[in-house]
Length: 283
Figure (cartoon, rainbow, N blue to C red):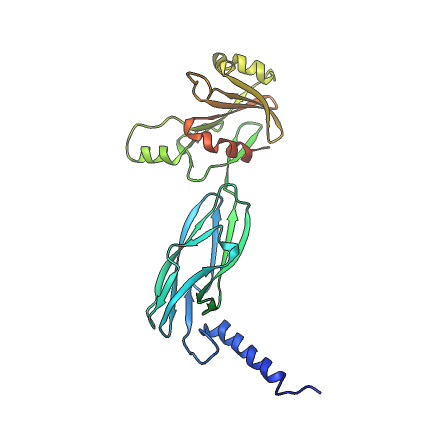
């Protein structure tokens, strides 16, 4: 027969301690009535790949807490950071600290969950503050022509120029540096990524089209390679290795039915151009 005093009561006591820690933010179950509280009580963040954001978090207690440490769960370490993790609390005097969230453009989209705890000498002084980070793909812009629709992800920090919206077959994208230059009233920087749909009524091959378009400008590029963009036949022109490189240094022509999609990158766009090309969807 089970001894109630030796079995059930200890379990009730242990459960009681867990309940107190989870609901009242008690520092321990060994007689202390100091309670630690987070605000907000949970953190839910939506962030786009390649972006950075800071969230203000507050921590307070009903008693003094010294020589404690803010600890991130392992699942958050790659994406979140706290500049100063050493914490001392004075009763009823909240402290605030920034939680920095940093994502890479190549991070996989999806939900990352974890928590922050307050610890001292390896002992947990508070229940977990739940953290959820929803990493999302960048929103896509759409360029329409009469028969084709091209969508793409604008690189993080870049902007699609609104002044070219009057021409449905031409898009210009500007980098953060170009936007800052324009905002300061300085000389405008030439387009750093542009996307254009050009008619190809004779349905010429890309090589023939390039020889005839813009006076054959692209056929003199140092490097010409066959490639694909979203499953469509494409031709890459790269003149970065030339002694006097042409402008734009990199251009891709894509054959789409009886049209050619022209995608060009200026020097400031080289680092993001491969990612930009991978984001393109053609309908």
